[in-house]
Length: 297
Image (tube, rainbow, N blue to C red; front, side, top):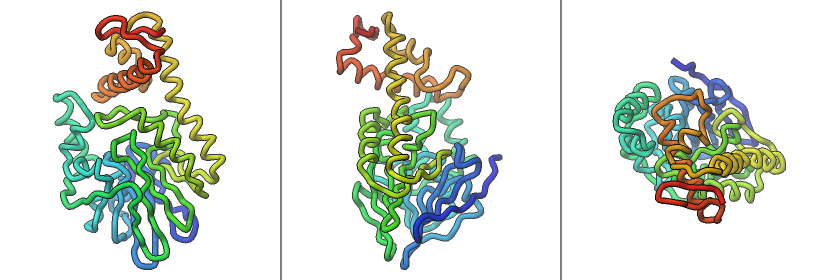
């Protein structure tokens, strides 16, 4: 079993990042504890909080993925997520459906969510929208909708501390992930642009990169993160020197390295390939030369 436990690092007067085991690398994640004069709030209770979760009056979930809700069972308090991810938080089956896995893998994944990540149906969860403000007393948490990773993926701006939690716009070398059924490459790129427009003192990520200080440093790292998407375009265009099908592109791989195996690999590769193809066809860089076969122009 993965180790649990977290370390605490404070930012400003009331923000504490609960750094997950292995620096928040999956299956762990980094959570955030926000203290106001009236209430305390937790964002994304991770696997590292199981058995050691700090008390809170309310929980916010950035998006309905297992590594961001594995510690949610520690809390019997109001739970909120963006309305577009609400169904997946209320129903573990809906969460699995959103992964778009083959039927023979769905049952195995559902069991993994239940046993490894303690995911259960939170039918009482309620939805928020972009711009919703949670007033904790002398400290506010404002929802910043950042779709693309999932349809309801959100960040949270914490004031007056100037702390922006960007969740799975996580700046890792893996790059942006938009391989779920409800994901969007176009929305992910728009969300990265929106993050650039928010001038914060600290930018907190959900995984290994932790907290970045200063807008300039954050922008530089965001450039590198976004560059992965551009490299996928370049890889695809080079591969399309000859006509290829989506399945051939998926086998060539834009997302995962060749040694990576798992039931999610081919479905994610197919959806990622299709999303890049849609954009490149729209920009005139790729043509569908015959039904289902594509070539770079």
